Image 1: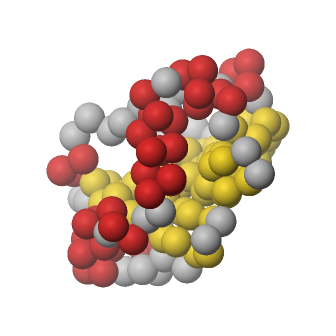
Image 2: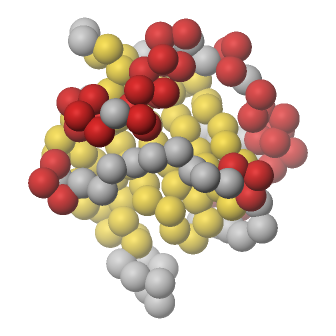
Image 3: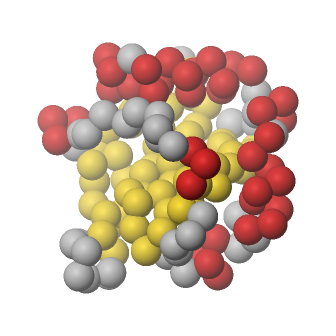
Length: 132
């Protein structure tokens, strides 16, 4: 599903391949907290690491009342950032640190009323093979 590091770095400039309606959704999603909450399917499926000492993953439903709003990553120079277009209605975003095997992933689906976040894996250790 996801590609290796070299291709991932090259794919960072795929803005033209990402649908225009997704680009405008994504910008508003990260800038407008009300819009973000309206465009997440709660309870949101996903994975959370237990803590820094325990790298095992826990499948949990993220809840609206405990959701930490997502913002743009301030220093993207330290990250690989990709959008994998799986279909016209499904996009997977991955943000991975360049110098460490940790990453996060968000999955978005186009629904009748627009794009929505449907799955979230918070930043946590991942082997490079999981991302290939």
